[in-house]
Image (cartoon, rainbow, N blue to C red; front, side):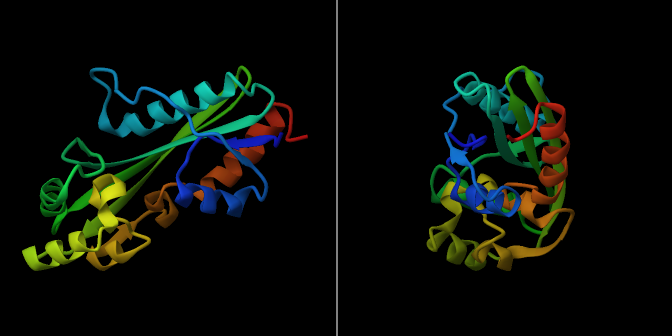
Length: 192
């Protein structure tokens, strides 16, 4: 059994985590992703990341478990994955010409030891025509992505600029994770 576990099935997160930890196991968390009433949109990703890490850590208490969640937020509203083309169209129209926030919450847990953090990146979209929106939707790319776009794919063509960590928008703030993981592993008993 590896000493680091990623509690996510996301292939994008798995690829990014290899930048930080060359060898890890993947055990996706199966949790109820409903948010408590009154929880701010800026706290949602970290809350879910903690739930994921805790669920997997219960089965693997000697490993460092990394839980993650990413949310796209505009006007204090969380945009999830689009249900269908019309839902995606509404999301992209809402994002068009505006700046929104992408929050990724990360939780580290080993037994009773835990810590978590959130990274926020501002993303500004170009003003999009209906034709641009329809063309992007037709690619099929947006349907498994929060907010209905992927910055690492064709969705990059919709984005005027970002302020913050690019990899955070993809789904894992690797630079911050590297530093937090080094400190956490020393504090919680190391990787060995």
